[in-house]
Amino acid sequence: MNEQSLARATGGLMSLSGAANVAFWILAWRIGSFVGAAAVLDPLWAPSQALHLTASILGAIGLAGLFAVLRRAIGAGSALSFALALVGALCYFADGVIAFSIFPAVAQAAPTMVAASGIMNGPPLLFTFIAFSVMFMIGYLALSAALARTRMFPLGAIGLFALGAVISNLPPGPVPTALIEAGGVVFGAGAIWLGLVVMGQGRARARAEGAALPF
Image 1 (cartoon, one colour):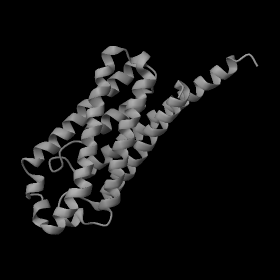
Image 2: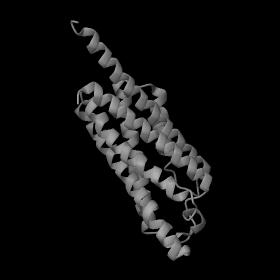
Image 3: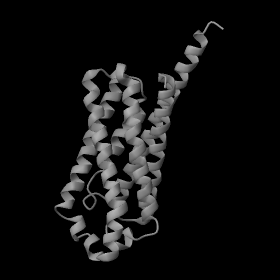
């Protein structure tokens, strides 16, 4: 695959990941909560978490492609940013696996375990979810800084991406759920915008190379 095709494919994956994220957070808003058997057994829970998993998988693959596309522009010093973001994406995937497969089974067998005060939302699993959120925030903030240094992306898109990565991972309870869900939508919108920019860069390179051909 040449660089132009890679850029178009990478941008497409990033935009699709962002769209899946937006859809996930909209469904989460419709469900109204992440805790309690009523939320976990809601008919929208399974499709919302399927979108969560889809977004995380496409996002992780898109990150690998983005690194390949930008490897010359970012330099060796920013490679760590992509590695941290990939770790964050994998944590997001692990969170989705737990929510999609484990929480519904527990909610059916022992509803009190998924209550706000239940063991599934308290230590030690709570510390795991906190670690997932922290790694996601660190990874995507580092990636946003690396993208800004390339001067190849609109600061508005990077700002949405970074802001959404932080707000969507703030702790529910102290932070209103609606604000967290809005942050998830903002993050997805930033990913869509960045993906479209990458796709546009791939098309521009293809046109430039085509114009240079001697026929």
